[in-house]
Length: 337
Image (cartoon, rainbow, N blue to C red):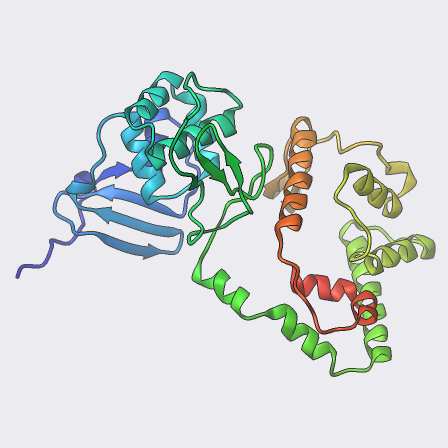
């Protein structure tokens, strides 16, 4: 039996999935964990690469020419990338999506696309609510880490995203991440702590809190006075006991550690970035932070997503005493987060 011919000719490849949508609408090249291609003589094949996988499909997988055909292939084979979908939904005429949903109103991928359009754009398509059918999850729970799910009767979809329109992380299940979960690092950390007497752990924590305080101020090229450094150490000690999932609490936290001359009554109003000076007049930028104009909405979404995930997180029972958990909380929080 002859082997399939080696895939070496780019001209023979048809880009499908997110790559095709990006090309069709002239979008910026947003990263995704895989790229998909149709090859006229290839069998189903995955080529693993450092930046993601290349997925090759035989001709029978080729989607139709319509927008809905390409979108269905994408959701079925490449999963959910909210960034790309948000950009696509800004470009595609709503009528094209309506046509796709009407062509298969009970199809799970059509309903997912319909829900995601309205979720990401805040616009309502001229489609009637579904009156029958069974609920399908938005994200397959064997492929993603998900939330508890909220029922959308209109789409017959259980929305199990981790956040909302303003801030919504999407985390794929991978062997590496599942391995970390199975490792039970929080339990192992607690077991290590139990080997040492309380007074030794307290001294170690005091040293680490002080060292972390000095390092944090050194990043800003600031030498704090004793009072200011003490406030920072105190905040580290309270890290697992105080509630910071609100704008007011975050501002209070900032005010406790910054110089009073630079205290703000709101989120920042200037554009920041993280980088380094290569030479005079030349900076290497590693990260550009969100625009001040976008911060209020982003932070509201972030805090809401954090609360949503906290409420959904199963309560783990530790064997440690309340005293130990309270005194060594910041260490335990790092282990169990």
